[in-house]
Length: 247
Image (cartoon, rainbow, N blue to C red; front, side, top):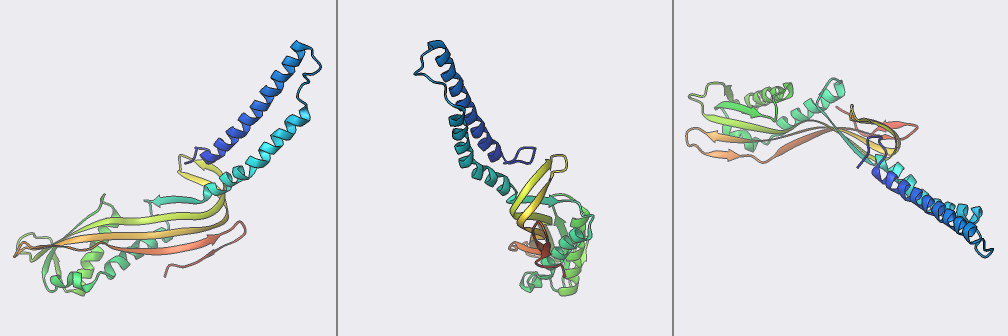
């Protein structure tokens, strides 16, 4: 959990403990000195500044490693999901994952449509150019692989195929150790210095479908198919290098 400043909540908890400890010693020192002034007894000496400073330094020495860990580990894992595809990398990630998904559909799942007329309907959570791209890509796969004729007329059609896409998009993950600098809520982004991290940029596509035989009314449901296209890299403060590339 993070605050809008980009510094994790654990940082503020540890800092609050440190401040409370400081306040406790300050109050204790003040009360001790006040009692000394009121009693005017030499046996009740005010707490020395050196004793107070030593106590505070011991507390800081104990809490400092936890404080640094909270800051350094705050960039351990982040995720960003993109819904705009302006760059070539994003476009290729999502289109390649769709091509792999549809191209790798097993023949056994499509053989029933061989040389048949098919009414193809596809669905996604929202109508986007990507969903229309996926529909046309699947239509061409049916025509090429099983010689199916994709039609728009609901009358005199052999099969109806309803395809449900559960994912068409890119996903970006960062895992490792990094030092956060600041957070921008409006852009849902933050600047950070990677100490040692892996930047994972993936295109992910998923789908399943129902095929209905209009002659018998029999409905067959497929399993869930998915495909992921990856472009990952290792990031350090000095250099970053790719692990895999888009083909």
